[in-house]
Amino acid sequence: MKGRVLFSILFLIIYIPLLLFTQVPFFLKMLFTLNFLVLFIINTFYLFKDKRFAPILAAFIVFNFLFFIIAPMLQIHQIYVSGDLNLVNKLIYEEYLLIKTSVFVLIFNIVFFIAYRYFNAMKSKIKIYKENMNLPFHILVFFIISILILVINMDFILNEYLSNNYQMLEGTTKSALLIKEKILFMIPFPAFILGMHYIKRNKKTKNFYIMLIITFLLLVLILVIKNPLTEKRNALGPIYITIIFLIIPKLLNTNFKFLVFLFFSMVIIFPTISLITHSGYSLEKLINKPELLLYQLKNHGVANTFTTLNYDAFINFSATIEHVEGDSFSYGEQLSGAVFFFVPRKIWTNKPISSGEFIGNYLRDNYGEPNSFTNLSNPLVSEGYLNFGLLGVILFAILLAFFMTRMVNWVNGEDPLKVAAGFYASIHMIFFLRGDFTNGFAFLFASFIVILFIPKIYFLFFKKKIK
Image 1: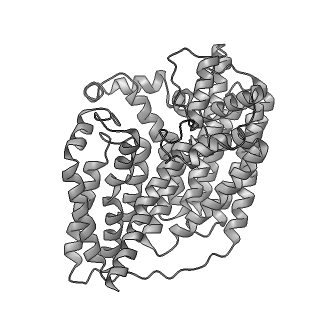
Image 2 (image 1 turned 135 degrees about the horizontal axis):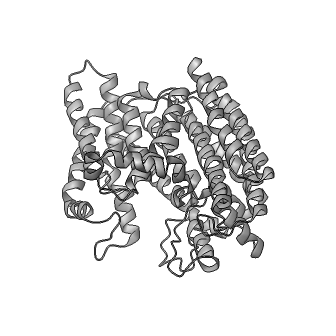
Image 3 (image 1 turned 90 degrees about the horizontal axis):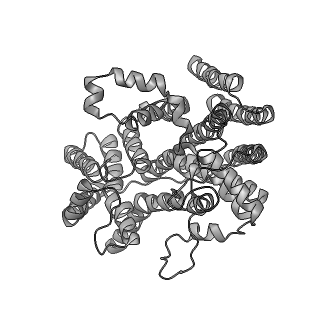
């Protein structure tokens, strides 16, 4: 109880200086405060009232605090201190735009919380999990398949080690690359999940030590194929943190533990790491002269990290609002490209680009330069507004609440694959909420195919063969 109370106090301690010392217009400060109070209520419910383990709600809380309160307040403060009216994404600062953005975020969060409480109160059907009696054999099959995938794609993997992430080999299409990266190379992951499930529940069986060795080797395979040299950070986080949860669940298996972990990771540790990686100093220099790190912290500060493009979700939503005012809603056109992301552009020639790129192009054409970076984030609430306006904001909040309660059901169930998929989605939720929706949805869908559908189809096929 003391820890939960202290964390709630910390929540206030971080926000109060933002409220008192940032140069943000009064009305905007009041809106940010209202958003903070809604978030504080959600946080209080999560820590003190929610009886079920719900890591995905922690991701929602941390994302909103970081991207919709801390970052925009510091970015507005920077505008007033510097006198430069260009926001981080080059959008010209207009107070009314940010007011509208805050109002829509407030509506989204209120509707979400009401819908989440409603769906959370609904009784879900309890499905009894029946463990496959031949599970060791199936894990071995998946292990052999994983080894074959590694051997067959060795040249491709070595090329990834020696080049930038997602640099395509000659003759490789983008669709083929994504299938290989997000599905084929993830095959060892569900096998590892099943291996961990088996060795935890069958410690006295004759297959225990064999499964322990195979599960360890599957972990090594995952680390070889999925690491900072071959994969982007937003994909590694869900994989590695899920692995930690599966190996040592006690570290993260309560709402308080998970919220503290995610909060300090996203609000303190990641910004600090970002400060180091963008310092311009090599690792050798920082080790030999640790005072350089202190110099970075003193002169740039962790807070300055929040004024970079890494935290542009709020102001990209503002850019979306401005675009809609000058043009119109897309009435589902933008959403269609995300939902049917798997349809190749060769077939669907006028397939819409992602909303992040769409708004990035708008900012480039109106405020930037011809070579401006356009692959921007665009948060889920902005996606709803871009497609259907206020109705879209409300609809997306309800759909998000429904999806999140389903993930909570999975995490608290018995099926090891669904438990892992629900936990994976909880970590991925930070990326999903930041957007854009096309990438967040496509990557999550691909992960569910690997973790859930491929093993389920395999077991179903094997069952029919036995009959």
